[in-house]
Amino acid sequence: MGLEWSRAEERRPLLAGSRAPRVFGRRWLVLLLFSLLGFMQGLVWNSWGPIQNSARAAYGFSGLDIALLVLWGPIGFLPCFFFMWLMDTRGLRITVLLTLLLMALGAGLRCIPVSDLVLKRRLIHGGQLLNGFAGPTAMNAGPFLSTTWFSPDERATATAIASMLNYLGGACAFLIGPLIVPAPDNSTSPFLTGGHTATIKDRIETVMYAEFGIITLLFAAVLAYFPAQPPVPPSVAAASRRLSYKSSICRLLSNFRFLMIVLAYAIPLGFYAGWSGVLDLILTPIHVNQVDAGWIGFWSIVGGCFVGIAVGRFADSVRGVLKPILVLLFSASTLAATWFTLTFLSNVTHLPLTSATLYTSCILIGVFLNGTVPIFFEMFVETVYPVPEGITCGFVTFLSNIFTGLLLVFLTFYHTELSWLNWCLTGSSFLSLLFIVCFRESYDRLYLDVFISV
Image: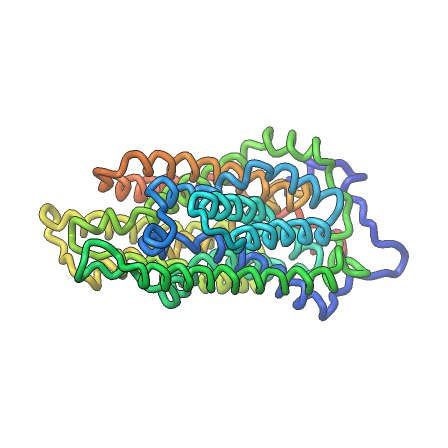
């Protein structure tokens, strides 16, 4: 099962005597608190994109400012290796507390009342950067938490919930911002009235104060109760010794199978992030407006969250089927992307170009691609065990965010003709499908729990 990668002493259980593995009911509270952290981090990160026109009117943001407010998320992954080290050496509690502290400071920085718009914009940028620094924990720590607190038949479900809530927070920003913050009204005059601008600014500040208050309450709750680990590990794998930080990085870089599925994860999801970020521009030539494009993005992410949690639960019920699940999801995403791309070229393909076909194909692309995230995380961990979960997923998301950030920077400065992205998205999904089909799966952690424990 690939256990030749680890030495016997590294797999030696830490459970002593008759202390059999055990799960505790408080694991669901720990999962809830962490999931709320991920939700709020995603919500704050995406809080400006859905209201960018209002932000331009209220604070004088430029197009570059709006792009930077989105890019602070990928840029925030630069200290990812520090958080990986912290999680591995100091545990989950310290890492989560530091993450929430950064989020609270960032949210508070945006709320400082200043009249100088230049200074206010800088404070908002600083707050978004601090929130970006929370991204490594919000996106990486789910598998570490599930292994630490949950039994083998609940791990994939816990990973899916912890991972998907971050995406759900980003999706809810499409609803919360436009629902509370009014859009600029240019129907009667090319210039906004002072009263309308003040209303927009007040509503934006209301959202920022509310987010700051929720994050502060969450920080207090975690400070009051969020154990680093349960009194007794929930499985043999959770109690086994792991590789050191340095050995883990070397192991990841030298494992060809791991690097193969890293590419299968990073390429399509990176392209999808760039594609969805400019979806309104892609759909503009066929007369789909920005609001409809936002709804497509929202339902794509929400649907992907539900699919991710559902397939995570299925993977817990039928063990050892991570690869078939990914093959199925990527086959579906490739078909959906092909459908959208050919429909977009209806003049050539003569496929019906309607709102229903566009919406359905776009949403299905997001549903199937986003649904692969928790399954990928579980496969990463199984492939390179006994490398710690936090280090494994941190390494993957760091590379993925670097790829996404570079793509977003390119799209920021080159967005005149974007139809080529449709072909790139289709090709990347198909390429990842080939990688996964050729991938030789192994379940080292599951082997330890099922056979060694018996």
